[in-house]
Length: 262
Image 1: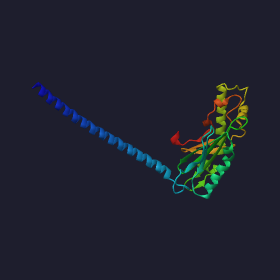
Image 2: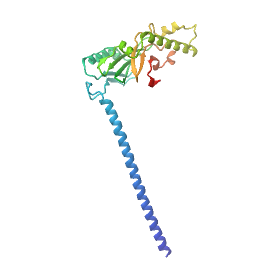
Image 3: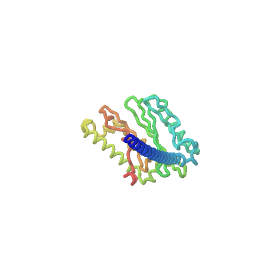
């Protein structure tokens, strides 16, 4: 009898375990189904968002298969990568913009030790593109160059520097003062960090090593997330080793910051 009773208990126990396993199996399937559903929803939302980002301007694109700005030529098998941008907007004015980019970059692309990059951003109706070049083939020190293009996506016109500055309610005098103060800060900070002493290299000496004769020469204006930025090229290197101090961000001078970014 003990054996029979034990057998019944074993069978009963097995049935309970089987039912529990079935419940776990069903719960696992439900969880997996929910996870898959969530993944699909996230994927579809992300896909729709990316598609929307790419399709927002299909009516003005020259080639709908590409983004509004894309790389028409790249060279990455080198220590000096090259990315040449193409403004993918219909119209003769943008053909001229692309011709101007090609003209600006022509010699740099053919030079073995040049880096060419670009960045673009859309703030409201303003599409802003900045092309960045660092020429390391120079005899003394690498030299930076910048060229920017600001486009009104509503009117499909290239915005002049004067119109852009008027839009941001800033004038050239205040921009020059801001750039001047930033260079003075760099000089003071370099002295405090003991790259040199005041009597070893004055502020005028500092500017000479930077290759700066006029604060407003070669300034390019760029709009990023609603902020107005000036790109001012200058030389990082000198016999004092300032290249250890300067970073790429030092080329950027924040002119006007929107309230949302403050």
